[in-house]
Structure formats: C-alpha cells, structure tokens
Image (cartoon, rainbow, N blue to C red; front, side, top):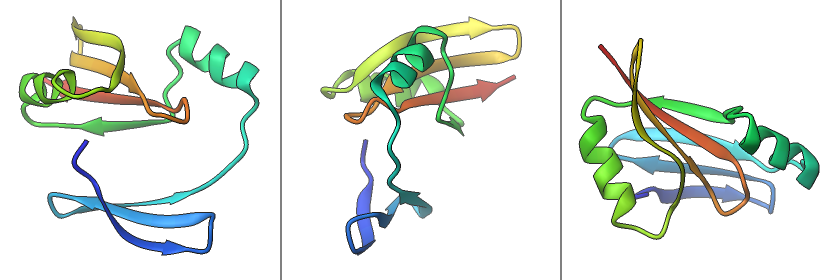
Length: 96
C-alpha cells in the first residue's frame, strides 16, 4: 500500500508512514472466529478518509491486495474495504 517502516520496538510495536502520515501499530491476538465474523459483517478495524478515492482504489486493485468490498456509492459518499495479510479489515471512504 506504499507504507514504509519508520521504527520497530521489539516484536510487538511499530510505526509506519506514507506520504507524511504516520500510524503506530501494536500486535494483538484475535481469534479466527472473530476475524471471520468481522469480515462477514463488514466490521472495520480502521478507516481512512481519502481525497481521490477512485485513484486509491485503482492503485490498490493493481496490487495483490484482498479487496473484500469493491468501490461503491453510499448515501454519505463512496467507500471500499480491503483485508490485510493478518485479516484486519481496512476501510477507505470519501465523503461528499
């Protein structure tokens, strides 16, 4: 997705960045049954607001990223969801 590792602390905490934006991540253990429930019911682990959602969506589609909800128009704007390699559900949205 274009993120690079900014720092890593032992094996459970890290910071990543992309285009001047930074996110700190901490590992956690979530049972597979919970991940499956979240995926089936569109429960998001994190959501990003983006300016040009079509461009972001097209860039993600060109990569080997699991798109679980293709770009769609909603009453509040447009959105799509992906799943990361650990099964976390990541949403992207643009609001009108």
